[in-house]
Length: 100
Image 1 (tube, rainbow, N blue to C red):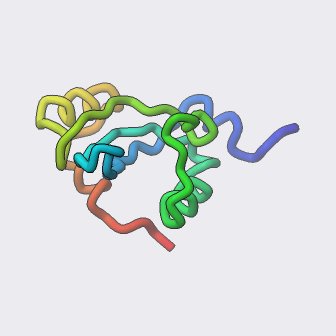
Image 2: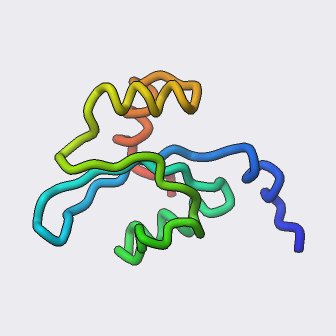
């Protein structure tokens, strides 16, 4: 079955920053790489709270995660380097509301 974006999904990812709360009540953050053809389903699942981070492979890959209110600067820098962008662009995209 050929989906329109299958080829680009093999090479492209949309980097997202997700915030949440652990079962202990502590905040966490994580960077994930979402497949372009799964971005809209990801946004819908995020909006309705149905994302299962233990089974995230449907949407893409979890890159790195940690406890706290936001990722440390060195982690943001490393993720930006891995995906050939700048930390400012990476964090700006994370703060912008998703396009409707």
